[in-house]
Length: 248
Image 1 (cartoon, rainbow, N blue to C red):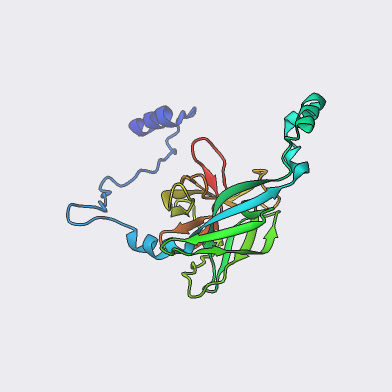
Image 2 (cartoon, one colour):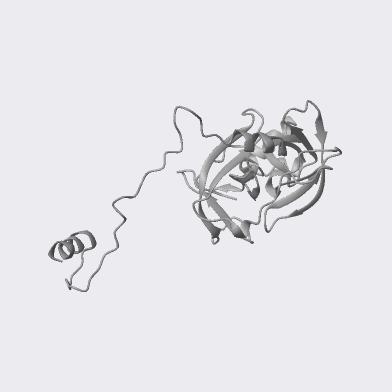
């Protein structure tokens, strides 16, 4: 018992050493399971290949009018405004472009994405991996409080994602974050679920996020967070730390 008590004092900083103190030890014969060998490669390729065409690229265009253009902080200076007014160089309109991702949720073209990807857009275009056609999308509905939106394209027999009950997601589950931003191409990153039911982040009004350490690349907002079975458990929404912690 003396060895046990000494170990307790050193490792757990116990103040009182009593014979009744007991510690729980791992079995000394615990075996290691090696998932890989030279004979085969551990891979999720079949899962990811099945879902990659469910994740789309979304590009948007928004026309800013003269009032929006004048929201530039330099326009607060009356001399600056007068100069451009006299030179007639204040633009009447300009087009703002943005990129994001989305997830096909039905065979007939319904797609879910983040509201901030499509909010205020005049034109929404969708591109699907392996399909040379670019589709024009219609905004069906949006919810700013949860930062989600539904758009639709005219297409048939699309590869719709399979939903998983996110209430059953567990900390430690292996997950993949998929996106399809132009300029980068399809991206897939792997991680684990770091936390569930995350709230109080201050991003949106309704917060019940899944936190993961899978990296979210620029343009991946609105993309899919899937489990190791290829099922959708969340929509990639935000990066919350410099270390790469993300929310879905």
